[in-house]
Image 1 (spheres, rainbow, N blue to C red):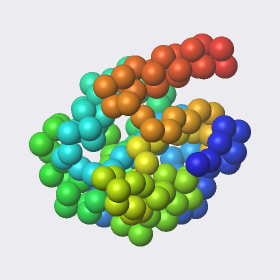
Image 2 (image 1 turned 90 degrees about the vertical axis):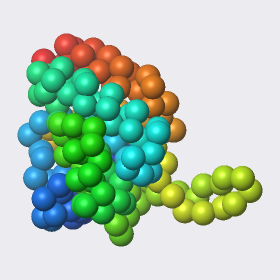
Image 3 (image 1 turned 60 degrees about the vertical axis):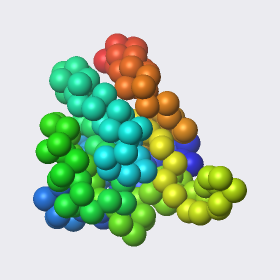
Image 4 (image 1 turned 90 degrees about the horizontal axis):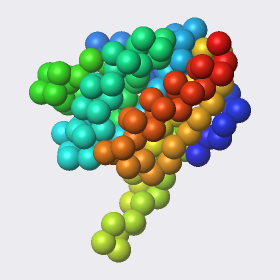
Amino acid sequence: MLKIDKKAPLDINVLNEKGEKTSLQQMLGKYIVLYFYPRDNTPGCTTEACSFRDANTQLQELGVQVIGVSKDSIASHDKFTQKHSLNFPLWSDPDHALLEAFGAWKEKKNFGKIYMGIVRSTFIIDPQGKIIKTWEKVKTKTHTDEVLEFLEEYLSKNK
């Protein structure tokens, strides 16, 4: 998992909500909340996405862009976005290149079965591309509040 003060991998291409290649490089100039989640339309992922949706106006007022990333297809993301009225982009990383670069693609264990999967995690990236905060193994019900609290405090100190 990438750590605070490390440069984010800016040049890895994934697919944006329109199916076009994009990268974090194109997002520089603003703060980014980049969150990795396992799968569209699952209970925890829906809770997390809807929580970011509900806080997005506040985050935008702080100059922050939220981006969700999973290995789901663009079609799946589109259905997820429409069903829950999400107001931020979801990026598709089917080859898990960005997931691996951030360390969010790891060995997991469930009911004794070992497999590779996405660790629910969040990174805040500053306008120059440096990671300023990380969360690993996120709790979906309270996570957005933690993100908002961190950003409000950090931005008030660093204006």
